[in-house]
Length: 313
Image 1 (cartoon, rainbow, N blue to C red):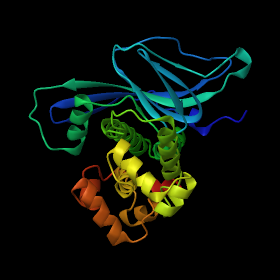
Image 2 (cartoon, rainbow, N blue to C red):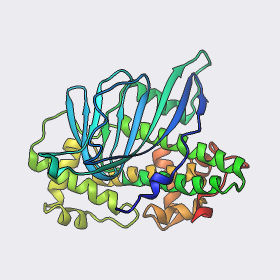
Image 3 (tube, rainbow, N blue to C red):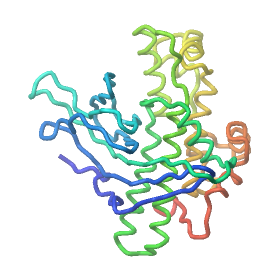
């Protein structure tokens, strides 16, 4: 079996802290984990920190309290402090065990007496603490963070510009955590009960959007892929996701764009990576969703020592 490059990411020696307004986040990067016939489960357990996971390959089950959720490649899920949980592969018998690969991070959130600010990260933390889901499906774009961490990890191992490389790793890890918090804080489906057919159509649509987020996605192509009418698909998005299809796609595009901005990609290079060729259009859409221009957003994360992600291509 071929070894995943993500298993070569060596960053678990780092402890990353970030003070944002009246919050302090302390992040301990974990490592790559594989669940299979040899190691089918990590057993029921709990801990005092948040544990955040991104599935890189395969599928399995996340047992959280009394809930059992199926997870697969691109899914982000989290275990809150003091909640019993378990990660395991799906099986009917020992011979039919599947495999599940993921990368995990743990972090603590603390409140301090500093005055509150309007920093984007503080807003993200506040929304996350106020209410968040446990699982966000079909977030394959988050794998881009692991790709950069792999490149950064290799560069650090080679001893080139180690201080700057380490800083870039820390920025990428923080960007990954904040992005996941933001994703988990957003309502994905209404609490209304939906039937299995609607569920399958929506999941198919979300998977298609995730896989083609860097391309032009038309309503016609999307509805044909889901074997439903454009009108029905629009109604399902409104009913169960509380949004329009266009808004959902643009939201996903700008979420991915914010990831690239935090990793200090050149702004003119980002549009094509998120399916928007025209730089002016990209800036307009980004400002609509984030309230500020891409340049101002990036400056909040920039540093003289930051490396461009594109330099690792």
